[in-house]
Amino acid sequence: MLGELLNLNLFGFFLIFARLGAAFAFMPGFSASYISVNFRLLLALAVTFVVTPMLIADLPVIPDSAVGLGLLLIGEILIGSFFGLMGRAAMAALHTTGTMISYLSSMANAFIQDPISEQQGSVISGFLMTMGAVLVFVMDIHHLMLRAVIQSYALFVPGEMPMLGDLTQMFARQVMDSFSLGIQLASPFLVTGITHYVMLGILGRLMPALPVFFFGLPIQIVTQLSVMVLVVSSIMLVFMAQYSEMYGAFVIP
Image 1 (tube, rainbow, N blue to C red):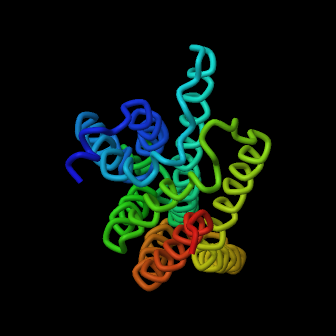
Image 2 (tube, helix red, strand yellow; image 1 turned 180 degrees about the vertical axis):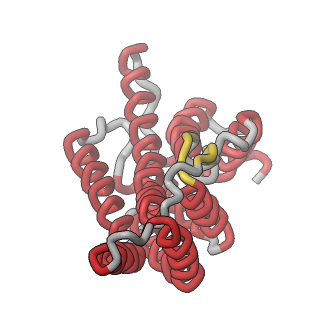
């Protein structure tokens, strides 16, 4: 074993690192801004070091020209980035759900710096996305993510330029599915919010002099937060099932 490690092909090592490093740069959880860049680099190098003996036999020979080497590296980086961005697109479903809940509970103006999406978002969006990132590691879905990237060498052979049209179409479909899932996860709050507004409208018609928004807003906030307490576990279970299914499609059984 020691002899194999000492005789590792450096070209193969860095070629595998190009794909894995690009995936680690975008994968949810691994790519968070609060994780040190040096730690992410060391983690990617460590995983590459472990899997290189298993994958090096399937790698192409060193290209004769610098152009060929550059194209080979670009192809590997594109594939790794694709797997990372697919995870980010799937995680965006929670951001959509949190944004809708914030609007329906009149808390859309309560902003925080979301540590997962690395942008300003509502408090509920940040809460859901942070919970999603934690559950990725608690439920060992990060193992599934790593398996998908490692087994991608059977789907995307190194040395062959990836089919950019198919990758783009798959990524666009994932964005569409994530938005649809985000709307579905927020459906209990949609029903509650619409019912609340209808009742306020009827009450305003029956009692025109009554300031309905004066007491309607606190009721709306309390109602939506109560609904969230009841359904947040179901929201996360459904999301994690869809998230693992997305990466599981790339894993060879």
